[in-house]
Image 1: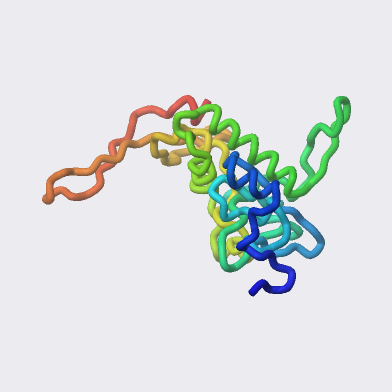
Image 2: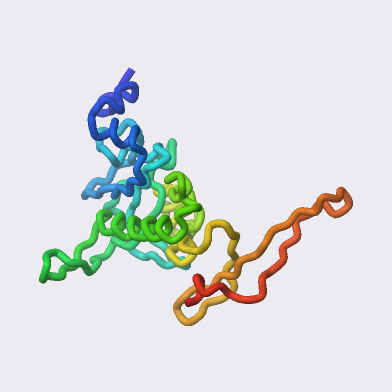
Length: 224
């Protein structure tokens, strides 16, 4: 049975656009969309490709008004994840006007989830271009940009943690070598610094605990 205003999920990929996305499996970065009355996004919402957030190659992006780690705030007009799933994955700058080219000679400032999606797409493209061997499957890039994001915690005075699966994109961390694990150690001016560490496991039962050996210097990729 299909609820009023909902798609029949058994016929979800019959249209040419959705069929091509499903078959070709490109890395697709999608803006969540916005309106004066934003809606929760889920596979059954008749809004494509925003309703494809459950697909491993589709990253749905919302916009943040305050994109800082200490006091994040999502844009109130942006569509958001439905309560039953995590279909909007990350947030990026776009809740306030962003400068950009509007023609070959003109620059303008607009806000919206399209601006946020453009920001996210640039980060994803650089990730895949910088470390192509690590992102042979596009789902790895989708997972990586989420796991390296700044989480939005419950208790910051808003319910934004319910509106997005993970948090706000952290380009500095997302662009580091994904074959290593990184910890944040300090800030160098306005830029975060990360140090790689190697995790080893003891084979003996007596010392069956994780040990971390910290590498002595900060990578150029992390601190310039």
